[in-house]
Amino acid sequence: MKNIIIVFATNLLLTLGTQATFAEEHVFAPDEHCLAYKTEKVTFFFVDVEIIGKSCEVSAVIRWNASGEQAQVEVSVPVTTFDSGNALRDGDIPEILKVELTPNIRFISNWLNRADLQKMLESQKAEVFGNLDVAGGTFPVKFVLTFTSKSGYFLVEGRLLTSFAAFKVEVPSVVGGLIAEPKEFLELLVHLRSDKIPGTEKLTVQK
Image 1: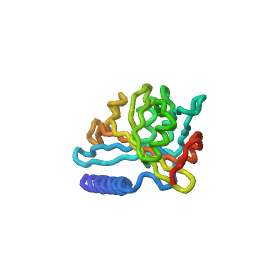
Image 2 (image 1 turned 30 degrees about the horizontal axis):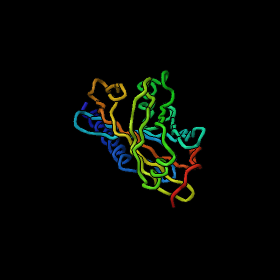
Image 3 (image 1 turned 90 degrees about the vertical axis):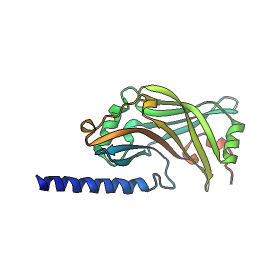
Image 4 (image 1 turned 60 degrees about the vertical axis):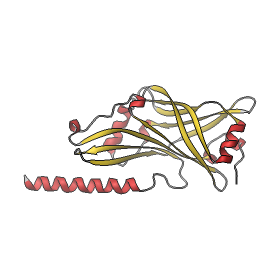
């Protein structure tokens, strides 16, 4: 029995060490066009472990109205494509996020004037309001974004600090919380390239 406990404890420490290392790394590579989520869980009541899931199967577009003076930004990603490095966890995500009701997590911004969009690029930061479709519901949200000029495109980075409760999502604990207890903290991360977003060609990239 003592040997079993030692082996179990050793495997746990190795697992936590691997997750801690991953948590310290950058979520995105510089040239990636991806989205990610970040959350935390408490293991054995005392160890906080950061969890990061990422998907690069992103669809993004800026749709302009007939006059070309207003636009909406739409970004979506299939629920089933997030990879956290843990196949069991990733396999639970579709059920947790009610994939049968909302196959794609989708953000649609409020209408934005062309002048406002240009000011966002010039100031290199913005707050963009809109609605997020997730887990069978539609929720008003605000993303805080920054814009960085690159060679031939601009990089859009941003985040939304929120919680699972805000989206009426319940994340189950593992073995009644004895192994792992999820926390309410949730962060949605954006890392998008304008050259992969149709409609951005109508905006001026600031050099």
